[in-house]
Length: 110
Image (cartoon, rainbow, N blue to C red; front, top):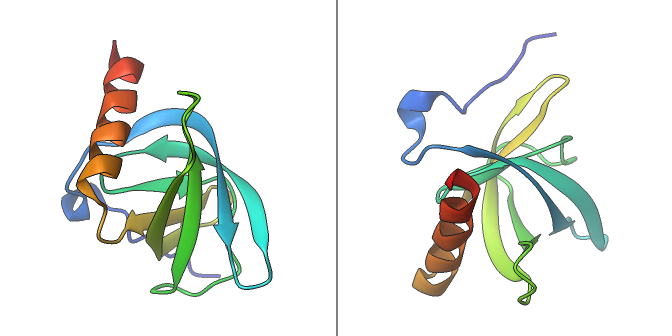
């Protein structure tokens, strides 16, 4: 089986940070919970694959541990990595969402 990986560092526009946060992905049949293993301003890596092909857009509810409402973000499946998970790229991230994610990442780096 060929391994697909479209998350090469040369394709990323932001550095990923290891995290353990929960994400609900609405795959058409209702939401399913996934654990995000890393996060950046450009996307995230989920702990296991979505049953969706590359390029599929999915609505995510990202629950940051800041006690505010979940962020509803559209994301695109960018690649899968056997035994690791699936990469997601954020699509048209709003300024408010970008600021909130950046604030969370800054706290992670501190």
